[in-house]
Length: 133
Image 1 (cartoon, helix red, strand yellow):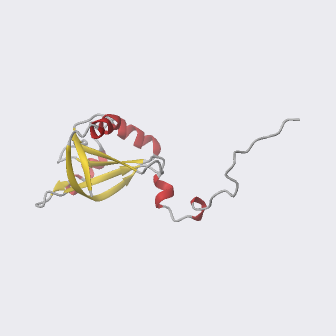
Image 2 (cartoon, rainbow, N blue to C red):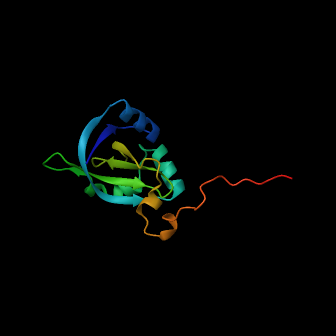
Image 3 (cartoon, rainbow, N blue to C red):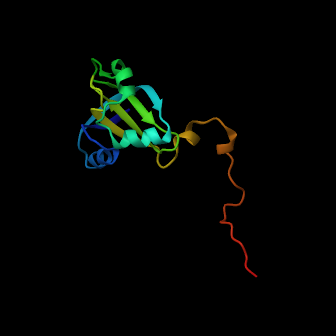
């Protein structure tokens, strides 16, 4: 898989705008580890990408570029979000290179769950209304 990575962006919105303008470099990548964050932590992480992060410190050795120029990255996501953030810190304590992958508006939880409650659809897709007499 390939994604466009940008360097030293402080916010996920800035990363998305840079990717839309074709800034950064296109690299082939492999996800070494997926880190699921709770809603509040994910919102904080995506808004403060250049702050030190414990997960990046703990898994620093899993992010590298191999001899075939393939990037090995961490993927940060949340069950409530429809985006996933790819990170290669290059040994630093913050997200030095980042990219964003979108689920196309679909939340991560329904996409990866095996529960039947997300597969069922309502029989009546019409909006419910009440009648006034």
